[in-house]
Every structure is written in structure tokens, then in C-alpha cells.
Length: 296
Image 1 (cartoon, rainbow, N blue to C red):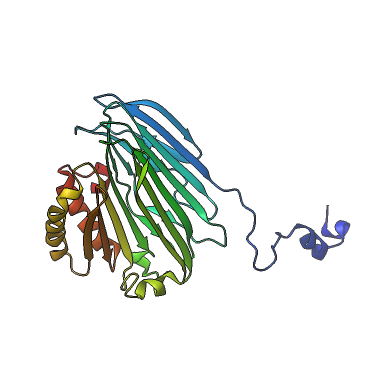
Image 2 (image 1 turned 90 degrees about the horizontal axis):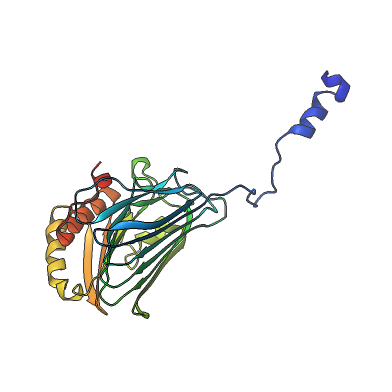
């Protein structure tokens, strides 16, 4: 069939050209929805139940430490606008577990929709969890809402480290526009003991330049120790921080303790320095090596 049979080339391309949405609207796309639900227990720790869907997977490398180790894999290769991911963990029967990720998690630019990441933890009596994902890297114009919720028994132990890089360091990227909301809610024996919300909306790089917000930082880390003896170790934490920061110029750190837990904050001009301080602190504080994927 020739173009002439259908009215010529002009009519053909008028019919078959790709659709262009109106200016200012985001095109409808198929988004990723991923979920991992883990239940573990007994001593030595073993997996009791595991559910996976979408691009999220959980793998268990062979390790020789005291704790069982799980590595979260996002086969989608990153988080795009409108994606939704949920990881839930339930530990019982004196389980001792470490959760990490294969690599840094990339959050790509969005043309409007907000990506959602929800992490939920429940720890029964006598259990211990170290939540140690590698860093999250926000691209320029990324839009991410992240939520971490934990319900702990009275003597359960939870250690959390979350690292965020604002822009790709190798590209010297600044986040001219973006959205990042980080919500933390932690309860012990049903009582809220820790609540924190960070919300950056708009020119994130400019906001982080303000002394009251980031003081020019391009990366940050939050470390929480929610073990029964954490609050009493505040001076030890500050000593570890002083030693780690002294070897990494530009990184600022602070530690505080209240309500039976310990909170540590790191701010730095680049992700390399913040990550270096976090690794040194994590190794000394937990008296355990980092997960092998961190050492790659």
C-alpha cells in the first residue's frame, strides 16, 4: 500500500505520530509496585516466612557472624516517579538479623508524581535488628516520600542507619528543584518514643545552604540506637564521633540521647565523607563488621 492510497505522507504521520500530552501535565505511565515481607525467628535465626512481589527481592548470602543477613535487591535499578515500595520485617523468638541493600538506591527525576517508600518493623521480646541500607541518592527534580515505622517490645534492640545524598557527586549535580519527605515513628511497648519529620520542598540545594538547615551540606546521615542501654552510651558515642570526624574534614556530627534511645546526625559536603564516618562509627559502635556488600 502506498502513501497515496491513504492520502499521502502528511496524513499518515498525523494519524500515527506519538501522542504529546498538554503542557504541564505528566503522562500516564506504568509504575513499579514492589513489596517484601519477612518473618524470622528462633535462635539461630531462620526465615519463617517470606513474600516478594514486583521488582523487590530479598537474598540471604552465606555469612559467619552471629546475625542472619538479608540483602534487599531492587531489580528495577532505581526508583522512578510514582513508584511504590514497601518492606516489612517481623522478628520473634530471639531473632538477630541484619538488613542491607546491594548498592546505593537511585531516585530519578520526576515530572510530577511522588515516589513512596514505606518501611515497617516489628520486633518481639529479645530480638535484635540492624537496618543498614546503603545510601539513597536523589537526582535533580526527584520527588520522594519515605516513611519508617517500628514497634518494639520492651527489651528489643533496633539500630538504624539511613544515608541520603542530595545530587550525584560525580556529576557535581545540584538539586535545583525537588521534594524529599522523611517520616520516622518508633514505638516501644505501644508508646511513641521517637518522632521526626524532615521535609524539603523546592530548591533543595539552596535550602541546604542555609545555616539553620544544612549549612551547605550535600549529604546527611541519621543513626538511631534503640537498645535498652543506648541512652547511657552518649559519651562513648561522642568520643567515637570525635575520632571519626577528625579524620574526615568537612563532616559535622552530633549525638543526643533521650527517651531511652540515642540519635546521631551527620552532615557533609559530599557523600564520600559522610559514608566514611558512618562506616567507622557503625563498625566501632556495633563491634561487628559491616555487611559484605558495603565493602565491595
